[in-house]
Length: 182
Figure 1 (spheres, helix red, strand yellow):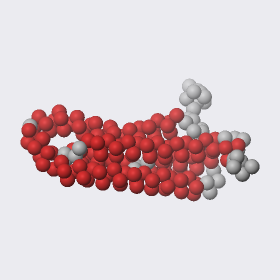
Figure 2 (cartoon, helix red, strand yellow):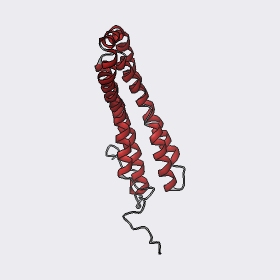
Figure 3 (tube, one colour):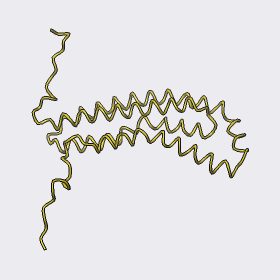
Figure 4 (spheres, one colour):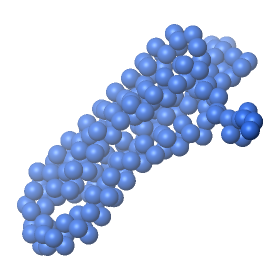
């Protein structure tokens, strides 16, 4: 019985090559907050609505003014958290530039992206909880859109850095000349 070396099709992707995997992971992360809103709505309508009946709608209606205000606060918090998330992602990418091994740098970048993309999602998930308690839908949808946008921005920043690491010619890291300076 012989053990064959892995074929190129089965070989693991290069650690410092931008891959479809990173794009897919960022997309799943970006859609997780809107997905949570959908699952919450489905559970509330199909499960809790049948158990509690019209009492649930009455309680949600009673708390609607307060939870709607809280959801609008979460819109602002999501915007601030998104800006902080992008800033922290840029700082993390700059700090990773000190790592001499490109494969380790790419692995650490992916790990940090998984963690840092949760920053803009925390207030968006809180907005979902406000909707569960009776908030209007508009501020919740705005918080979801802002959160999704910032997660995608963070993912694009990470992918751009991974492309720089995978460029063997080094042209991605060369400074670009500005047309304004000519």
